[in-house]
Image 1 (tube, rainbow, N blue to C red):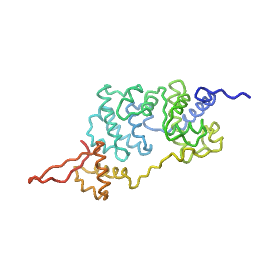
Image 2: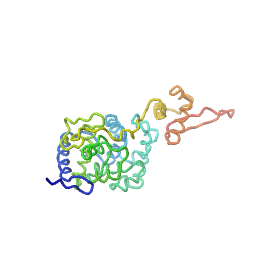
Image 3: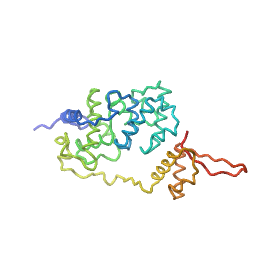
Image 4: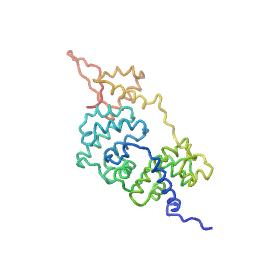
Length: 314
């Protein structure tokens, strides 16, 4: 019996076609009703959602996105906002440097693109805070055009279905991107729908730790399932990311204190939030370097230096 033909990336076209048909049909009835997927959502709204969703779950992003878009519905609105207000609005989304990059992005769009989010990947990746994945996602979800949207969820789906691997390699490879490009449908509308469908499957069904194979619409096409669910061959290369007691936690604690304060506060007051002086100082230096806080120091009437004050940037 003749084997099914492969394309130059090792993908069986017939399998890819079946994957498209099955997954797009599933997505049509199972897609989450998210505000940035709404027909009337602007490209700016899509861009904001993509930056917020980096390393942050949808449940935390959705209310923050709604409040953000109500307050700053266009790049021009955010470009003119006080940075302290932007950081406070970012709240507990994590990695607050993303908020600074988003405001820088808004300023660049306002200044260089007449307030309109660019519609080409080259122009998008030239913006502050926009990488290859985010640019592709904006092309697919805002402009409904063909792009290779390859996030962690999509990589996991393709690794399992196409390669029979439990999880993809820790780092994206050239071969993996080439294969993903080959799998994306050729026409714009189906390609954009495929981007959303493959991400949704990875987020809701084909999850990293507890995949729901019993309800997976493409279970019959999955090599990982057919091969008996082999273990992750890259497990020894993956690093866990602790949180408790790390400098990241200290930075988060300090940022929470500054967001809650309505005036500059002495650095010494932060000792009650994080007693370890050396770690606190290291976190403060890092936050200042990243532009997430500012320091000020003045002298009293006798010329004696007052305690250093810290606050969010204006």
